[in-house]
Image (cartoon, rainbow, N blue to C red; front, side):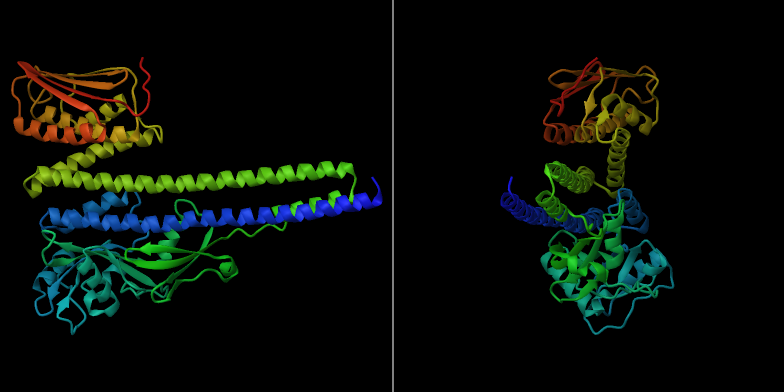
Length: 516
């Protein structure tokens, strides 16, 4: 090859290398923005999930005809705290609507919950008040807000009015929280969900959550693992800077809009990892220069360098896809938990006639759900064994179990099937313990058999049963109709004979079953 030919080849290689470098740089920028978009979605989804927590608390208060006490609210918060649903909140509270001249009810509830020294403050020129009568947890920050009339402050009053008018959750503009009692000050905001009795009646008050923006972002972006992201938050309507990023990363921030109840934020995000001086584009250019001036031996080295770059790009893509998958799975699990708890509460409220019956029914179903979840946690993401699920439910109810036999092949349930079947098995076991083969009747026995073919069939046979409780059967039938027929699209049969009670449940499993 002549000198001019080598120069032409070298020039072509250099030009091609620069074009390829530019393409790689562009692809890298697109990938980075997609990864940051997934982080913005994670922030927004946390707010959505926590707004659903407030809606669930509202449903609990309304179902109880607003006759709640501190123990009930703490029991509910203990349930949602176990799955990390309230991580990032400063607290969860209740404020009741009162005429300004008539605050006896609010003051009575506040002192009932937190002691006779509590008061309602400050003075106001408004015709109404919304004083805080309950705020958990009662840490020093939250205690500073006990009795505070949020309607006396314009920013909070505007959000409360929007929530009451719309019947939906509303968020405040940036505010200073009453909880800011230390030198470490942060911008705050609050989300309000209105509470009405009977749906169309006059507002009873609001359930709400206060937030410190810095603490909230630290929880979302650093736990359970640090995503390595710098963040800047601006309230779009007011232009107020709520949280600023490290100056070193401001130029690299990518902006995304997210919704907080009925408000919109502008969130700037950037990865904190500094770019390497030997990025893909520079490596390709360097390889091109080497190829232009060196021998065929250096051409081979260039090819190896390009292959290494392609491999590195592929690994980055796989890592980003895994991160997006984990974020999607986290959102899916949170939605499922909220939806299932809400469904259990609604079903229990419809099937009971008093507060005590509602509490008992709700507690039974949550225990069954927890038992199924414990078995699922043991199996990680691979579902649960039907036998293990039944044994877990037997252990949870206590009572007489020496006349219980289990017979059936290995059967693996998906997470959805395990939670549904766990609710049913718990209800059947409870009824057998109260009225059937596991009660005080010494001759009673329970046989649970299952088979696996195209359908998974579970036969429940109680022998030595001489009475049959129609009331318990009625509730159980409704539960089975809701869970088996509607959720699993299966079928349920019941036979009552002389001295025996047989129930059969069958459905097409979501995954193939191995028998033997």
